[in-house]
Image (cartoon, rainbow, N blue to C red):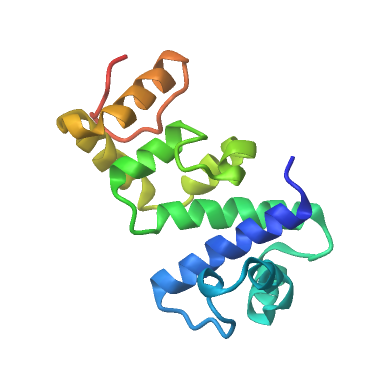
Length: 164
């Protein structure tokens, strides 16, 4: 289980990326250019972020609120990002693919949240096609094959299948 601080920090980092990708104004400075000690304070000091988390997920004093926020922000960050479809499939089938602590600790919840985004099934289908047709994605192909061999179902994405 991740600590409250880890969840808050991860939710903030994903929220910040989502804001940047969507062109949404963030009144706080970008954490990327800040010293680590200042960047760690942003989830606590950024009123816009805290207001959004409170509005969407509830009481900021509760661990469950931050878990829910971190899971949703991770799912949204991957599902609606500029990642290539094959990368989204890698993230889906392997908790360690992108070194994402929330995905590693709350994998099932992250995947369920990802599937709430209507565009994600098409991205998974496209990613499986990329993996199947391009030898460069051998790492992702191996991860998908292992995932299937272990008996995990892939979301229903049409006729694309990678045999183990």
